Each structure stands twice: as C-alpha cells, then as structure tokens.
Image (cartoon, rainbow, N blue to C red; front, top):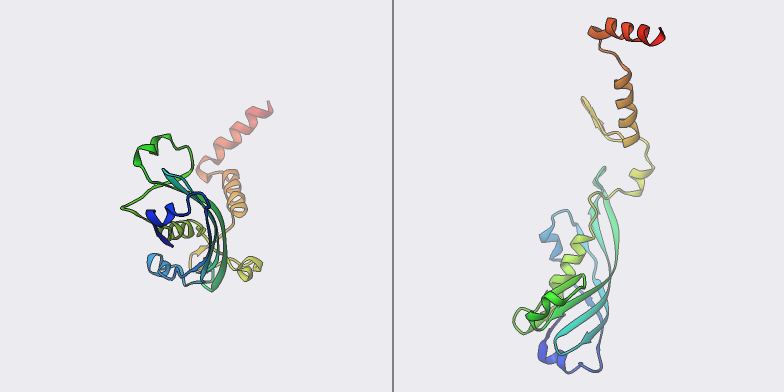
Length: 180
C-alpha cells in the first residue's frame, strides 16, 4: 500500500484501481483491547492530478474485541467508505475543503497508517455481545450494581419525592399553606 509519486504519475490519466488485502495485525499492539484482526480488504480507486492524489476507499474486515460486560470475544464487522486526499504540494493545503487531507512525507504515499487510523476510529466505546444484550440481569457486586439510564432516572425521581425527616414538619406547613 505504498507508492512513490513517480509510480503514481504513470497512472495520471488512467487512474489507479485498488483491490488488495492488508495484514493489520499490528493493531493488537496499538490497542490492547483488540484481540484479533482479520485480513483487511481495501478496494477502490485513486484519482491522480499533478498536485494531489485522491483515494476513494472501501475498507472491510473484522475486529475481535472483548464484551464490555462479560469479556467474551465479540466479532465487530468493519465497513468503511472514505475519501483520502494526499497533497503533493503543501501550498494547496489552505484551499482544500475536503474532510481528510494529508501531506506527503518525502516522495512516498503510504496508505497503511491512514487505514490503521480509520480502523481505530471505528472501535466503539462499548462492545456488547448478543448474549449480554439478551440478559436482563446486569452485573453487580458487594455494595454496587450496574443500572440502566431508565432505572437511574426512577431512583432519582424517588429520592426527590422523599422528604428529609428533619424537614418533615416544614413540609407539612407548606402543604397546609397550599391548601388554604
């Protein structure tokens, strides 16, 4: 997934078609949460101009991550459509209005670091296995338990309704004033 600018200039009018499988197992070293990485399929095309190279990529594969509740392996499918532009002249950077713009370091364009970054950004904050979703029982321990947002809201509403025993007499006075 590396090309020199000279190699890419040969495809200037034709365009470059990509259809490769990349080994991204180094992701396991970058993020210890990643337990396994399938071979990543990268397909798409590259539009090559004299001042920039734009890659239209479709990235597919699977990551294996631990379930946030049970720590069992969860297969996370990855399917990313992206457009990455590499500027051959750094002076054009201010004129670009595209989302992903990269400058070329030296005279080689390497897509592997870009793909690594995109894969890491696809990892959700929490991964929950199908079995954990189906279980109604959430994890708990001594003096603690995990509750849903709805349960937390109910607990909060109940606490608001409770009157501090020290202020119970004042509460009665307020109720009397409202009734009169």
